[in-house]
Length: 572
Image 1 (spheres, rainbow, N blue to C red):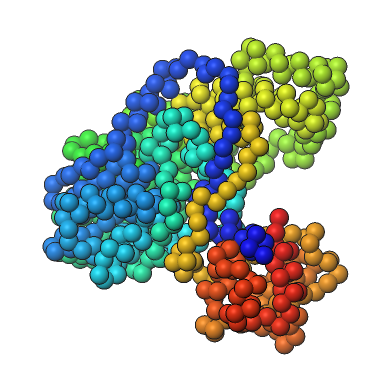
Image 2 (tube, rainbow, N blue to C red):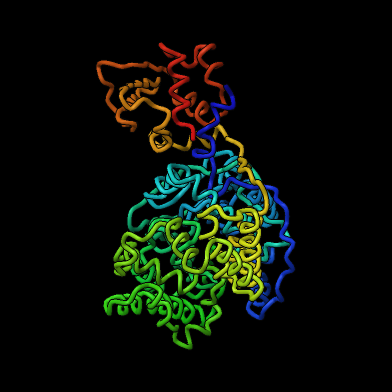
C-alpha cells in the first residue's frame, strides 16, 4: 500500500520544483556563442560565492543558491534577512556568519514567500536556544501554502525546466538572478511567520530601528526593509541587476506592474544610500537613487506603452513589434534581459488587463491543432510534404519554424520519432543561442526531455516538521483538485467524515464526480474517519502507510476497505 499512499506526495510536498531526470544528451553540435550569450557568462560575476561586509555590521552572503541572505549585527543579537533556498545552503551561510558574529539570531525576515528566500529558515532556527521572530507580510503564509498546494505539480515541472535543475551542471550558465537553484539538495526548511503585518510595521530589534513596508511587485506579499539609521534599503525582489520578471515563464498569478512601480516610488522617497537587493550584488553611493529611478522608469515605460497600444486596438504580437525601450533605459546594466524580457512583459500586462482573448476573432475558437495540421498538410501535398518542410527548416536553421511545424506533425502522430528528434534539435539550438537564462534553461531542459523517456522523481523527501507548517485545509484543497472522475461512480454519493483530535472536522462529499469539502459534519456519513491531523498529513504525504496506521489504531475507520478504495480515486 506504500506505493498507493504516496500519490499526493508530489502535489503536497514539492516546493517550486521536484522533478529531475536522467536523459541522453543532445548530439547536435552547439551553435557558436554569440556576443549576447557571452554577456550572460559575464553576468555570472554577480553571483560569485562570497561574504561581502559593509559598514554598520551588514554582511551579504551572495552565490549560495539563488537568493542573497543578509546578516545584520545588533546589540548582542543578530538579524537575518532572507534565509536562502535550502537548509543545505543555510548551513553553509550560517557557518560563515557565525565566524563574523556568533551571537544568537533574534529575528528572521522574509522579504516574500518564494522558496529561495524561505526554505533555509529551519536551519537558522534550529541553531538557536530560543525561537527567533519570523517576520513577514500577513499574506506570506497563504502564499507559501499555495506553492505547496493545488498548482504545485505543474509549477514544479515548469520551474525545473526554467532553472535547469535536470540539466548537466555545466549546461547551466546561471539562472539570471543567481548561480543555480539548490531547493532539491535538502529537505524543505520553511518556518511559518510568527510576526506579521498589513501595511507597515516598526520594531526595534537588538537596538536597531527596523521599518517594514508592504511593497507589492514580483509578489503580492513583497515587503521592503528600511534601516533609517544606516540609510539602508533591502528591497527584496523589487529590484535586481536584470530586467525584472514582470512575468515568469514557470507560471504565476498576474503580477501587478502598476503596484510594482508604486512600491519603487515608496523606496525612492526614502532616498536610500545603500541598497541590498535579494539577488545580485548590493550597490550604494550617489548612483543608488539614480538606479532605482531608471529601473522604475523602465517598468513604467513598458506598462504605459502596452496600455497605449492596446487602446489603439493592437494585439500582443503587434505591441511587441512597436515597443522599443528609451536609449537610457535600454543601456542601463540593471535592465538587461537576463531574467525578464520586454516581450513576455507585454503579453502579461495585456492579459492582466484584458484577459487571454487578443481581440482577433480567428483566435476566439481556433481550429484544433490536429485539424489545422490536417488542413496544412493537405494543402502542401500530405504529411510527408510537411515533414520535408520540417527537415528543410532544420537545415536552414529556422528553428522556431521547425518547432511550429513539429507541433503539427506530432498532432497527426506522423513520423513521431523522427519529428521528436528534430524538435529536440530545434529546442537545443534555440536554447544554446538564448542569452536569457529562463528561456535557455527551459529549452535545453525540454530538448533533454524529448530525447529521453523521463520519469519525474521526488528530489525533496517529505519532512514531518514541514507538514506541521501547513494547515489541514490545504491538504483537503489538494485532494479536491486531484479527484480522478474516471475512478468514481457518477451515480454514487459518498460522504467521508473526518474528525480530528484537535477538534477540527471536515466532510468530503463525492457527488457528480466532484469532491465538495465542508467544515460541518452532516448527520449521515458513508465513512467515518477519526485521527490526528499529523497522522492524516503523513499518510497523504506518503510518510506513513494507511494500512499500518489503521492496524495500530492511529487511524480509526469504520469501513477501512472502502476508505482505502476512496484514496485511489485521487490518483492520476
